[in-house]
Length: 277
Ligand code: FE
Ligand code: FE
Ligand code: ZN
Image (cartoon, rainbow, N blue to C red; front, top):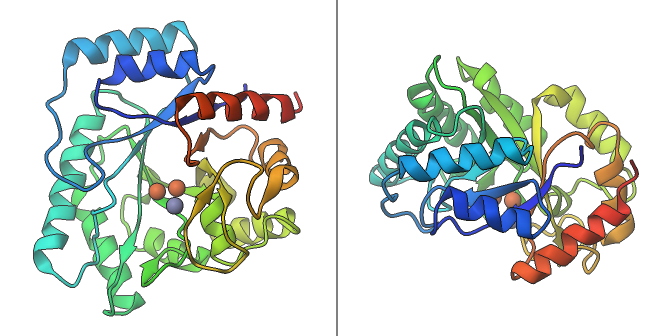
């Protein structure tokens, strides 16, 4: 099954997102657990969740992917910001259990001058506090573009975080195609080589989801500017190889391209045409 969806607004709840995904002929979606800038999460509407779970079952939805707010920074220099990250992730993971067995993705964080080592220590400490043996959610580290002092641009940094987390069987990685290309990994000319390296350093069994984005910038630019599919430096050919690659094709793919809903619908249709069954 080709698992394909896009980022949707969570403001009207799970059932509304499920219906929206169906309209776009998607079978999964990503959403923010709360306003991307942070703030309080809306209370869980259990009726809505119940309806969504039925819809997901009726329409064969595979996993869905929740995204933590961008403001979550587990390795901020500011203690209050680190506390906010901890409280937010802990609360998000409790809420995720209403839709059990899904994925929760977050940006490892920006060390803001503290250095990579301190950053990784703080991120791992947060994960060691919030992860629970009984949780059914898999927490994903997103591969980052390396903008500013972002941690997670290299596979080695992600591996280092995983190594320091006791319950790392609850963890995986979400590969963002725009970010890794921006980070210097040549997925256009050497997808096999990059995946071999990923496998050697992290292990492909850790890879749980793909953020499928084109990029506005050339390889290694560390800019993190997403582009529509086929209109950026990755191009449609490279993206077609990604969605069909034997190591990736069974993973869920999520579009985070600069699009409105009809635009996402067109990209999903385009990708379905490019998919080799
Ligand atoms: Fe992200
Ligand atoms: Fe992403
Ligand atoms: Zn991005």
